[in-house]
Length: 127
Image 1 (spheres, rainbow, N blue to C red):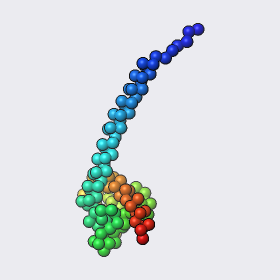
Image 2: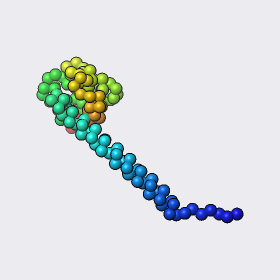
Image 3: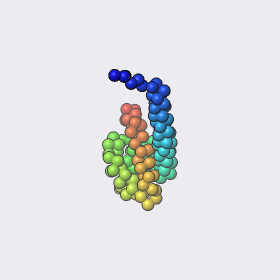
Image 4: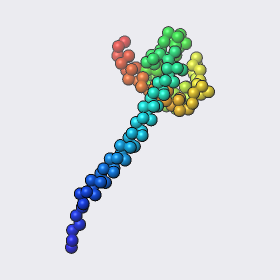
């Protein structure tokens, strides 16, 4: 009975091919994620920041309208579906934006709003 031996060169080629595929996939995904983040921040700045402020904590205008503190546990504990509906349809004094921005932009803004969670934790510790 003859034992089969593996060819080291074939193993190296297979590993190299796998790494190349992984690098290509990672390169394709990373710019998209960065683009979504930048898009969400840009839309937030143009549509939301006037009332909610740059960090989600609110502005004088927003506070006079009783705009939610987007850093708060109350907001951050809501589901993505609930927050998407608020962004789309509005709530209380907040207008809806479904006719002003695309569904993709709404999702990008939602992702941006989620980044305020950590800021809310640090803001509540300062009080």
